[in-house]
Image 1 (cartoon, rainbow, N blue to C red):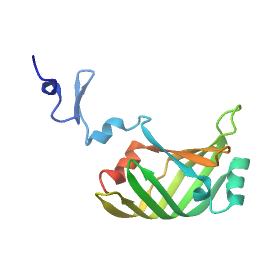
Image 2: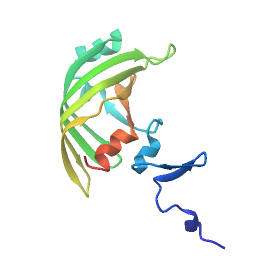
Image 3: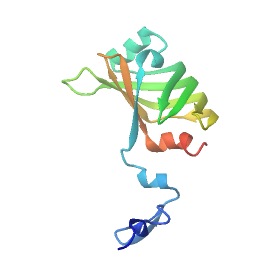
Image 4: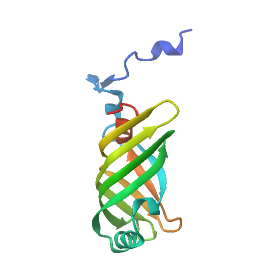
Length: 160
């Protein structure tokens, strides 16, 4: 009887697709273009510096530019704090039978970011978190952010 590990590939970045050899630059390239994402919940008061700005984007389905002074959350066991975050956000209704709103962030640039846990403590400048989106639930006054794996891994795994 053979060991199960005997069937594992030594290099997961090499694969055969439709009989053709495909080599990925990294294991993360395997997931590019696919909807793999992390979700985190953040209070609305962390996103909008004031209630009138929150009301403007949520009620009027408009696009706005603003600055988030600070943002603190936990992702995959990492404590993340960011400051001076330049944002361009636009909103739309999720569905006709829901009060939830989708907020797209085509531009989200953080000037200072700290990523830490028990093992590491990294600081970054000019972090690009563009292309993430969030669903706002008015019942809880919280946003569920959807962060693609490749964006999260860029800072959590690689450190650059």
